[in-house]
Length: 285
Length: 285
Image (cartoon, rainbow over all chains, first blue to last red; front, side, top):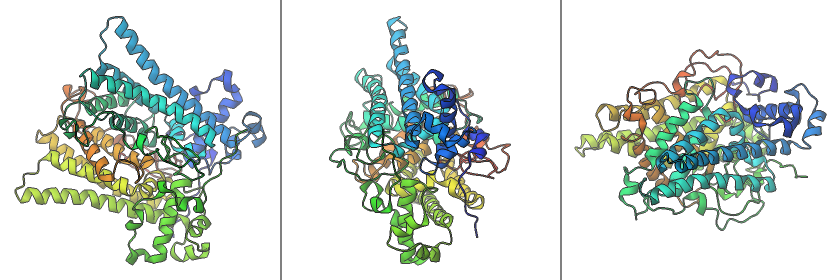
């Protein structure tokens, strides 16, 4: 009979190359302090490997050689550790995407003639590379939203909505200015973000694709998604060709009861995916 | 201070519309028996919502009003429940993809003139729709591989490798016969499968996209991925334009020590993602 599989201990996680990324650079020492930063880095590994619910505060503090009491000095609860990781992760990702837009704006203002395609390409490259570079923390950000309290979840959902919005704006602009085909903006953006998000499931820094290489490859794919082949744009008024209509992401949240109902643990920002008592429209991937 | 978030109980999970899918049709009554099927359906919900490690056998059996002892009659361990879900899920998905190829072959033999594009489109539509239709079980199949024993994991990895291979074959054929651009086969297929897999994170059956509608939309995107725009194919001999070279998926497994090292919990079929003592080359998404 098969041996029962135990969860991974912090000791096992410490040196695993698949759990190495640039996440520790996400935590500012000024904000979190040196011990706080070490605790956050340990928590990222524990949550990514075993899941939020199966991780104890002892696992987190033990991962950096401290007692659980030391953790409570910095984080009064396990949920607050998760919240800090997810909040900072989402804020940094949003800032990163916005920086790419600001850069494109600046180039355009300087007369460098940045087209909508270049903007989308830069944005997708940055979004992808950011998730690759911080793939362990990003995995927690994407797959552990269920561990948040409803209040914290709402806050994160707003950050996700804003990130999606930056993408939707550039794609909608490209459709409007004729750079792109008449694609279904919401659905296409959901597909792009899906590519950038799904990599946290399998990416590792010591693989053959560097974060920038993967970013470049996915920027190509994103651009192809908005070009004129396929049935989407040959039937612009048909079911799959409509522009700006709602995909699952934005429509299925309507009419959802903001009740105490539960959710799949591996959810994303959509209301269907991330926890109890979370009403309102979805935000897509 | 924020209230600590508890995991979801089977009672909470029972009626949640986000945990409804067609997974119960995956288990054959002849193979699993009536009680076995109910236990598997309960386990799918528990694992999908709380993760394998945070789920107890009491959760699973309690979800169908039975005692833990009743579960052990059918499954001697929690890992064997997980294994049954993941094995059947992967076998059905592979069969589904192969059926689409067999259908295309039959049409071609009947002189219906099925081109490589049609084959890829049908395959992607079926792959996507299958994952949407069974998205709760598929979520367990994708995100809980870490709970398997090394032996069981190896078996699943082989099923994943075969599924990927069917996709790689049709894309490589399209590149060879000139239907597609000279794309990087492994990387492009990884992107296609990423789209089909990531939906298990956010999809729900009562959303606006039916499984077939989403399948059709992603079939369009898959076809766009292999067309002639973007830099990938304008530089066919360059870094991002090469055909058939290894992406992260197939190369990063080389030289991995088959040791007792640990892995991210949300892993996929790649060796980087799914557990201890798992050597050999990766299989991509």
